[in-house]
Image 1 (cartoon, rainbow, N blue to C red):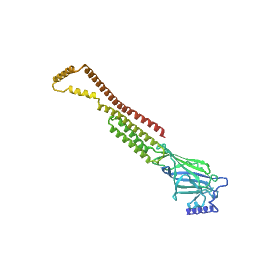
Image 2: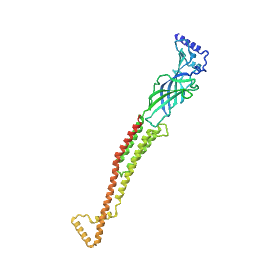
Image 3: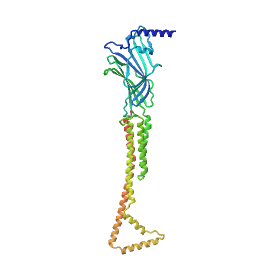
Image 4: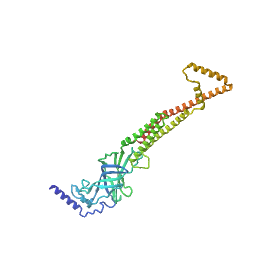
Length: 404
């Protein structure tokens, strides 16, 4: 019975307040804008990405309507069917893409104080545009704004201000972002309309990308250095290793771009993978250089001079292998005597000079081959130390610049 009496009394008060009330007119006096205090409560952040933000928010407003004051000590709670009978602010979100208001279940709430101050709250599911700067992706920090303004009333009639309370965020557990700051920005009466802005700053969680991008790219670079420990002549295995690492890096870069919105500039993750690709490509060039040196060495060893071939043929005839050592000595003695008797002095001089030339040519070939071999091995040894030092230096500079 007490509840029935209260409802009847509330209905009577509401009906009496609406007598002669015209909702077409804004409750203000000429020359004085209506002060509307705004407060935004973020009930849940559903999604941040693809240049937009999706969330559920409470939009709370407080203003004064002198036509709705009465003599009492109790506030009046208005039901939803009374909302279309009184004047309401036409608050809109400027950067809104989609919105849906919740009907019932506490979606709309209005209280009127006896002094004429009105408290109005509504629960709204909104999708707003959220421009993002991805230069530092995935170590980036994004700020999404909710820009509030009046749809029809300029700053001479309506002025939005802060309620003095902090922006409340009740639920913000996101897999890729962490809320780091929520604040109000009172823009005042800039331009022809009064504006009010709420800023929500999110820090991207980089753990996923470190596991899926940075660690694999680093391992690919390290694996490419295994070619420095292979023989310089083993070109097939070295090329197979380097080309496999290059293709893996290309696939890795393509996978990154599939997981984030496409932009026309390079992101931080792109620079890391591209630089890693550059290190692998330099290892491939080093492999080709070392192989060229080894190839030059091999071509000289497989094509000796005619003098060297003649010398080997002559020695093979002279030094015949027999089981009787004495017979070998007799043959050598006879050959020497025959050479002395039948050879002219000029022939002896020519033979001596030819033998000397053969010795010199053989010595030069051996020295050249040894230099080529030493050069290829020296390059590999230098790269084993130089490449890791350069890559570590790149990582130090990269993370120092991009880490927040």
